[in-house]
Image (cartoon, one colour):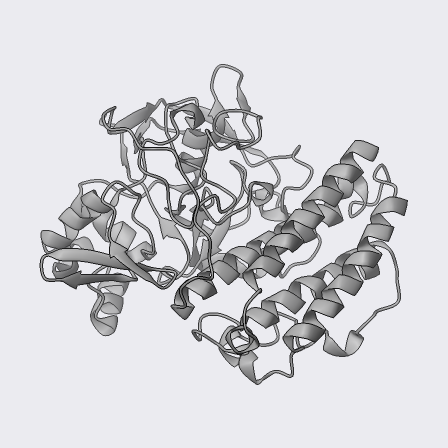
Length: 430
């Protein structure tokens, strides 16, 4: 158990270092709202500390609340993002002091807690996994906010492996059952449970995410101007908003550029397309004579090992996502070139299924058969229905601690500020 506690402590330190790095800026930038879609950065910073206090200190350890008067300010369900600038949130210095005080007590709880306890919050360190993943998810949200701020020099870049050309456009996934979701991964969320057998007909799925070059062909063929490719809701949204390209793309004469963390640069044609809505992804797929994969199709192609008849934690197996396997954990602030990770392929040969971009699927967000909320309904259950589309795979901004083949994300089909892309699928001809 000491090894598990040491790993948890390292994860807690790593995610906090990340949060502080993304908020190491002038106070004016931290307290300002850069888009009504996002919270002020300093709200996110104190929110992760308040969440940690609620779940580790109060719920798991029974410690008297430190700052009960701020609970409503940092309750994500009581105030929508657009209204958070009006809240009396903690200023940057006070927010940093608050989360530091919480973290010191959390490490004391970790040292004393019994990870073999029958308590579902304690067992295998679930409550620590809950707050670690939650903070990483907010770190990714902070990166989306920093992108929307347009301020240069705040987000670091790094080196990524080169892409490679060639190879099949699609991979084949034969008909048959697979086990979707998990009953065994200790930090998996409630919406990934319980594992259930799903029998799928055969299908083909793109080996790689759709790239900028392919997406540009859709644009240049008039894809944004042809209602044949759009759902009625998508076409209405496109017309109302005047959408003509992915978010942050601009045309200068015959050349396309993108704005990335305050820097204007040519659109790299060999990267996965990023910052597209579900409506755009769905329209492209129709134009290409394909469709978006269902969530089940995506997970089977990503994580199922047909020989072992078991799910893998990652497409390639159980090994941690090293730099030769996937673009995760903000190694660089953009997707890797297409074909950069052949060693990270799934059992069916699909590549770059985790990292780079979140991938839209054709599915609405619902619970699996036998779903039970834990530890609270507001994480998953309140979002079930035909309002949110499922995304899979994790982006370059997602941390490995919050990514696995069973992990489910969801958002409105109009969302584009998040690091989203997609790949296509098609049914097998009978």
